Image 1 (cartoon, one colour):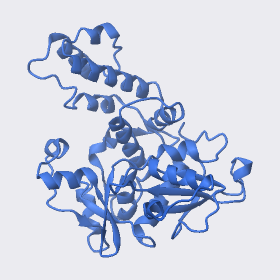
Image 2 (spheres, rainbow, N blue to C red):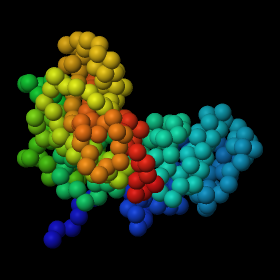
Image 3 (cartoon, rainbow, N blue to C red):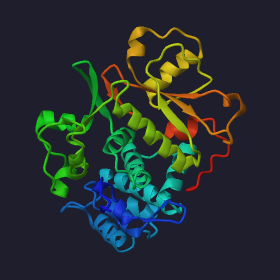
Length: 338
């Protein structure tokens, strides 16, 4: 039997333990990793209060930090960064698992920087997909925490990581790539069976495009990721199947996987006309079905729930996986990792 291959090393999953329920246990090492971020590493001219706070938390990342200690920091930007960091740390630390911390954010609409939420989604997905050997699923999962720039090429719809595409256009490597000592991407390759094995060594570069053309592997792989995400966080075994096109679909229940898809779904729900331009922005359409014994709202029982993903007018897809937590018609969705 071959050894399990690692991926997404930069998300810090190796700093976490997995509990008996499958959730990720918040560790001191994981909390300390945030202190290495450029925003929190005191510059040479930082005041004594900032340098002291940083050193104290490196020794004890759960050490209580009061507002007076942060107010003593001279630099206003540094004070704001530390206020955000301490609030984030306190939120993670008060929950038994990262999954529980994420669910609390989503269900109670707590406000934290998008960067922190994306990182949290990535490390939870790293846990969800720990046994996954299908790199198409791993690449599709990137849509949950990284914006994608779409383009049409020879009749196919390709999704490339937006940050990577922007970096390649300027020729400047990201700070993370430099920090990890990784080889900057020279170009974006489209993931295929021929080059799939290379994903493992370049997973932190986010330099492989995914074909999201209807009927091909990319969209199906994204549906499989959705199945795992729902199972892990809501403890419901759903089946998710890609649907070829948005035509003659009756919405008994639907979830928009991003802002633009929600707008299209709302229009269909209200019986409004959806013009051709809006229909062409639909990237993915899925039919989700629940098992017969699932605890769901009665009005959604016996009919499929539809999931929609769409791109903006600028051809960007920015999925919101939290919509699957709050939008599905699940009752008492306590999950196994809450």
